[in-house]
Image (cartoon, rainbow, N blue to C red; front, side, top):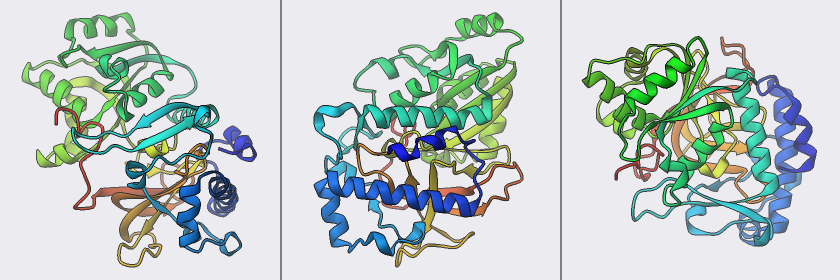
Length: 359
């Protein structure tokens, strides 16, 4: 994230209307693209081959994108290697090549601040008791420190007295969990976990024993692949109902993000729509000619972010399939584009953080 973008950290994450947002994003992405061309030779060669001309850019759809797959094949960075403070890896099963993303201090800080800004819109700025529906090993074991471990560490900063609900063998710590809830009786509780793992190790465990946590006031954020749940014929509605049946009065927010664009998360609102913040945007591309799709048309998801300055991950074509539902007019009141994810392209590898566990 370049210095000229920093003042926008002070903006409410869903306050910018379409015209202002488009102008802001074009300006920021032009600066970032120039930065990456000047500092990443591989990226510069790609854009040269694509005939990139900054003067011809008038709207977001005019920017050239690169495939998210390139981060599996090349080490792409736009800062000196000695400036890298963290190397993130995407989720992946054994034998799969995983994406590598190189973060310097400025990019890591921008990602953390923007994530905090987005989440404050849903839970406020006060740190609340937090339950991580995972094992603590996920953040301690270097073999697990991929998007999964980073997600846990990043999300933990929004809570206090953080409790891990699963032991090292992925068993639910039922007695300790009951004690934790008793300790924080009368307080709002934040819960975080990965979609399938919550289903497999929390929902199924409690349902099989006919038990419920009976949380009176909770907010659950979950992320990860849905492929395994789809195989079990579990819909979003059925998932949410099952979670509430064993957890209690819990507001549930799915959210979308990836290792290649950490910090630029797209959180599901109260209406069930994924939202773009002022730090990110979305386009849908027609897979036949890569033209930009209109609202309501299905295609490949392209993600844009103003955050990555240490690596050229600011404009990425993903392997996900979706459609934009609208802009500035979601009933929840948040401004910006809102969209629906419909799945992954047929030949894409399974790599959702929760889908990859145990494979």
